[in-house]
Image 1 (cartoon, rainbow, N blue to C red):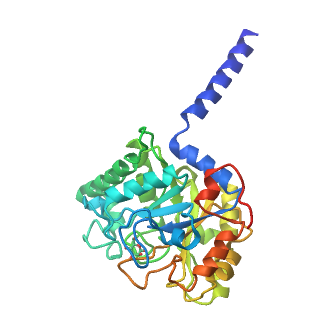
Image 2: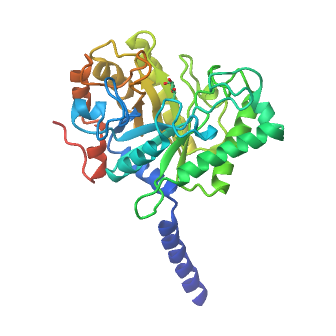
Image 3: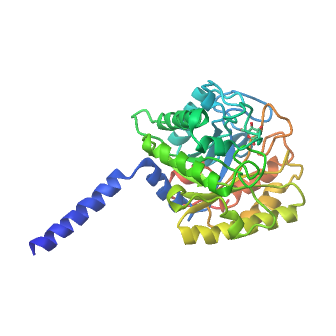
Length: 362
Ligand code: BMA
């Protein structure tokens, strides 16, 4: 009797403790799992820091200027943090990024971080795939030490994301993305899948050993028209290292092809997400300058509809590169169509996710 009582009591205590002690990352995973039952969240990279015709204003957003609400997910970029720069590679101050992450968290939104670090061997930017940098990192020595210090800087930044009360803000961190392409120094031209997996595991282990408990880790290959589950998993570091499956898929050719390719990617990810018990999302998408005025409702919606996934994120409306414009904006021909996309009951913006109620179709 005593033994049974003791067992039950310790079970109750451990359940209580595990709920109370869930890390910010685990809490976010749970929230994301709940939210995907309500719809697909819509995200935008660098949303509150610059847009198609403005930069560095505060309280502004191209998405909000079009539909009256902020995106549910905001993406921010860490590239150049590793060099101790005060601004990222797109000129956004890290202090501003931190401030916007806190603001997004306060309004009930979600944050995701990308990272395009410089090549640690050549000192050129992320788009320098020359040599075998991962081999050099893994073989120890000066490059390894530099790499280790870079992960330390990322850890310090993620740990510094806190509310006024000092609680850590959870974020989705998406390291070493688009490795299936050959353009980054961690991509398929510059390393073997095993080297890639080692670097990925090292990164996640190091973040955790440095005390990062607020990062949900997302694995994001680039899309491929001939995607298969096997190809998708080529660089997968293992269930222990990943919380979310992602894919970066843009429209380059016809809309029909885009819809077909994205649906194929998402169908594969849906199966994998069930088998591996992971979340999944369309982590980057867009159609350069959105030349199709109805792209959001006739391209994106048919591509994502029916999937019980976490989010879709439109890449940035770059202030510094005119040809890099992927989200909506008031002066773009797709603005009216984006309002229809916003009104669709399957898409979720920040107001839709902060409360407990489902979005009501207008
Ligand atoms: C890439 C491009 C680059 C940018 C980088 C980090 O996809 O948009 O122009 O520097 O992301 O934001």
